[in-house]
Image (cartoon, rainbow, N blue to C red):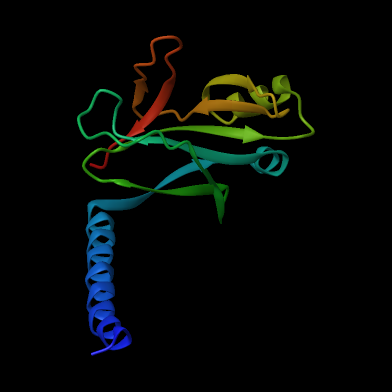
Length: 164
């Protein structure tokens, strides 16, 4: 037997074993997670003037064993009609997830954004400026559980969702 014959006898089974292992891990991960909608009601003027996002901070709470890594995954809210906007979040079902929403607008000042967000019923509107020139207005959703992170220097207050 030459080298080519040996390679073609060994390589396909090795690739198949690797592929099946990878696939089973993906399926296991998919089965442990779920996707739930977080929805908000936005008056027409507010929805027209700003772009809304949900920041998926992490799965679970900071002190929980097996908590997820810090993600900071930004998920856009999508218009589903009737003033209702939805962001779908995939997370590990046994942990729930931390999140915080924000709104961006290049034309509005923070004071104008804050007034519109508070008029829409959002809470704890705060300003966060970055070195990249972003002037985001962060806010919490009313009626959704809150969670204070365990950051030593500056703890953050986020919304926390756990499926019922």
